[in-house]
Length: 397
Image (cartoon, rainbow, N blue to C red; front, top):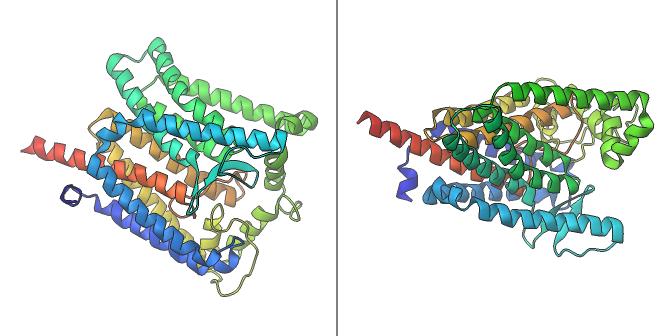
């Protein structure tokens, strides 16, 4: 305990986390009338419990240190991979055979991404995104020590190593029909490779391929819709139609987006409050928490939320920039990439800029697996800050 509290705590980071906890729990408590899940009145208390468990995780990570986590990363990676494989098997068994064969596996909104335990639902992909970043960070650090010069051959080897780590969990998560977490994982790969120092030409190629893929899908959607609907099917296709024309598809695909836009569009400076239900919001406690905050607290609430998000990102980035170990810098880059991507996509999809993909708002949306997985990352960030502060203190003295 003494090691943790005498370890150069990054207090601005602590204050931001406390503020996010308060905003999340207060919103979840006041906005109960908008929630359509069972036990809605207890959601805020569960979120508070998750935050308390997160504090315990932060303490344990600092107690044992990042070195032990780096040492055991492949064990965690293997265990979580087994969990992911089990969910994929369950999904295809239920779709193709109509039977459930994996104990405790659970499907929600078309995705088979959870294990339902007596006290909580466990989503392995959320934890895998953090473990994957740890594995990539250590691998890149070892690679750059062995190959300090970044040329085409060495960069190709590095991309191959990173792909070998990232692709299996990404593919398994996508096969669970969870495109949201798959995209978050992809974002961490992009950010961590950027921090690794690979040649800029790789990013030109990557952006070029991405642009071509987007243009191809746009062409198929406009001129070859029969082919497009064979590639993009089911729930994903509905979300695209709802995104492109939320008002015209209001009774079906566009219901969520249109109501979210009406929520923040009519909230004014201080919002409608939560005493009366003024509009229907699905997934109000998770995907659309930002709409709920804006609906209840107005522009002022949205501004405070964005300010806290900026403060969180600044603290994480500041820790990474000052880190003395390369593996720590790469790790923080991956976590920073996840946060930035989730925050941008979640708010952008609520504003109608991007399609709805089930991506939540970190530290504010309700969800134990997402919050606790990020608390592991936060704990590691605190330990990185402590090690950096001690190293600088020793260097001065």
